Length: 384
Image (cartoon, rainbow, N blue to C red; front, side, top):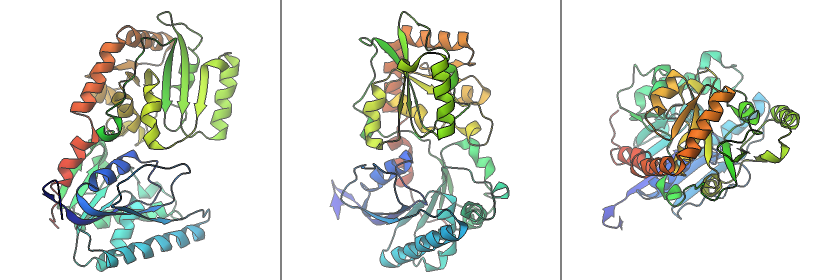
């Protein structure tokens, strides 16, 4: 079969032991693979409510519903998952199996003998499970344990950040290591850009999981301050646990800025570009020092989603983030003091159009998912 003169490969399997709506790089990967393969099969757990991301007709989904809260219940769910995986690899002749987490890696390892013939095996890890620190009554412990044993069978191992490679044992790995940053896709973000020219308020947005160490409280503390003659508004979009939200609401009430903060929950990813581009400045602050937060330079979705919409962003002034962001004119550091935050926001407002256009152009030309993913897809070869 030919598509625009290019011969497509037969079939690819994408597997993740989670829903896909919360993982934009996986959504983007499926979209790109659907242009390369005649069939793309996706094995996943149930999605978050409200998911309506649009894929081509040659993408087929197999979903395992899960609601188990006990270890025994989770084993039942996982048993259903691995049985369906074995059924699929017997039903299809996959050229490629791309899987995204340690539990999916455990699935491939456990059922390796059923892979006849052997397809290209590609493990892209979007998190860093370190099994000695995980409770043995969690599947993630065993996933992290078995992913190391799978390494010798892999053809491609990829990560969103080179900083995370040191946390994986690749001593038996003989394939290709690829770094694929969590950039957004041009196919979704090409047509949006922020503008501040007619805005009565400067909208500052944080998108992602709301938590401590992300600059949210510090921004709330300066909302009553006019900057460059403009009022501020804080947009909080993402999942938040009730306890932390109560703390934020108490702080908001204490600072008397109720009318300057808006909460929005998790929503469909394909609606995010329009939502984000209606704001002006992104918050990309991470102060925690755990593995995930200290390796986010090229692994943070939100940073590059801001950029894709032409939003300059504020980041935490630390050696790690300076390494990744200091050469971006639209990325402005802060030490989170009131003076520093005000100065950073004022600098962005004063140079807004210039910074916004520079951010958008860099996304379109360089930091987009098509650039970093397609070249790997086009060179998938069996090496193990």
